[in-house]
Image (cartoon, one colour):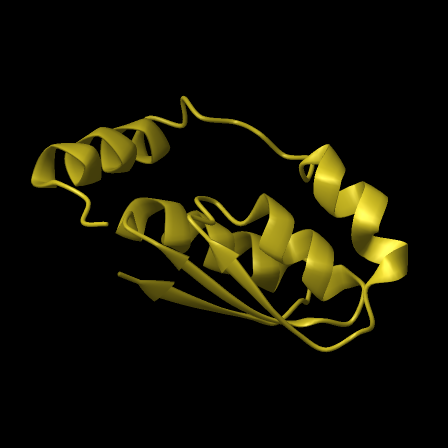
Length: 91
C-alpha cells in the first residue's frame, strides 16, 4: 500500500499544529503486553509514538515507522524526554 502526498501533508499538518493528541497506547497493546515476551517490536503507522513508547517502557526494542516526519519528530522528542529508545523511520 502506498500513501499519497495528500496523506503525508494531512498528517504532517495535524502533528505540526498539535491537533492529534493521543497519548495512551491502544487498549489491545495494553491488554496483550503481559502475554508478549520482551524482544523486538514493530510499530507500523506509529504517528507520534504512543504505542512504540509504551512498548519501549517495558523493555522492547522498537522500530517505529510512519509516513509523517512531523509525527516521528514528536516520537523522538517524547522518547528523549522519557529516556526511552525507539528507532523511528519514515517510509
